[in-house]
Length: 160
Length: 144
Image (cartoon, rainbow over all chains, first blue to last red; front, side, top):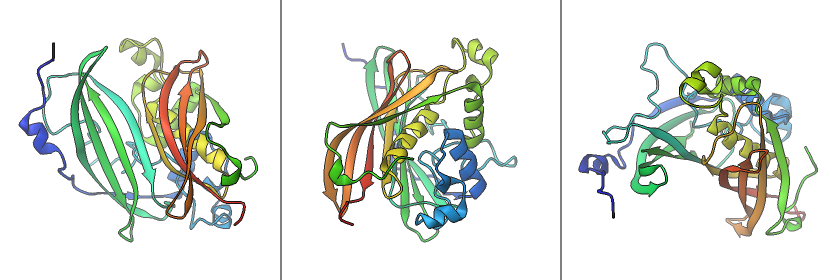
């Protein structure tokens, strides 16, 4: 027997609405700390001259640097980044991170200033062994200081 | 890092060298600092168990990043990682190895680049594939 749909007109209206832009300053220390966290030994992530010798403008960002709650950086005078706040109510109270997909169009390096905007790209429903689920796919587009789209992040949140 | 790999030398179906990272509590703390994700289920055992987990768990995003590192260390200085995608299907526990694998699914030329697509995944030491995904990289040609 099919479950009744929980997708409302309010949810459908939220699809495609772009957020206010956020600014990310890509800094050397952040790159180094992130690279160290993932266990990278490649010196392009730590040594500026070495990175330049390998053809980069400065330290490049490792994969996965974007899309974390650490960028944009925390500010005490602003509400904490509501990573999982949806602009609508659903009947489900539990949430899971369904997955992450990041595409890189060109190297992003320390010294770049990125502007990101986010939107809900899709809302769908499915039933699995944990029961009925609402899948919300969000998309964040990153532009650099020259206005080019340099990366795109897609994440899926599962409410159930 | 190993020697440069070239587009002509890889085949569809081929497995790439695996990457193993033991996700100690220290590693998870370093990831919390590097990512800005300070959710306590990853480093506070009492908190984690209070939510019903058996112990602290490895951040999904760290597994995503390790899959990126798997590809980065394979493509060499002249290769580029273009896309890393994965789904979080299972938990990896603190102090356990996360073992990352990749297998080439397609070679093609697109927009003047040598593109290699891969099935990638992370698994537990018990062989459970917790984090399946796909990757896209570009490789240099020997002719260049």
